Image 1 (spheres, one colour):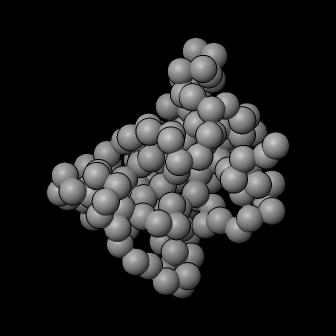
Image 2: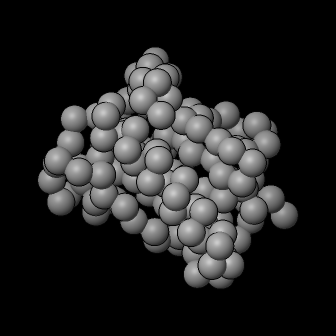
Length: 129
């Protein structure tokens, strides 16, 4: 059975795509902790990050690094935080969160954005890749 993220990759569920390559997909989180909160995922369905083969793990981190650098150029923040929790969706995902305060990494602090805001931000991040 396809995960929510596989459905996003296939275009069955819409997303605010930032980037993709043959093995990975990055998109804005629709329930963001902070403006620019992005998810980086492998296209291959795998539940836990450490179940990825070592080369797959390293490729996901390289992909995430590229996205984080674009986020830093786009969203004003002290740094881009990274988290891998994976309890909400059984598909490996790396959270990249532009942060200015620790509360933005708690997953209890959320910000609201409109569809227009999401689209504009996705385009701005893409332009910094």
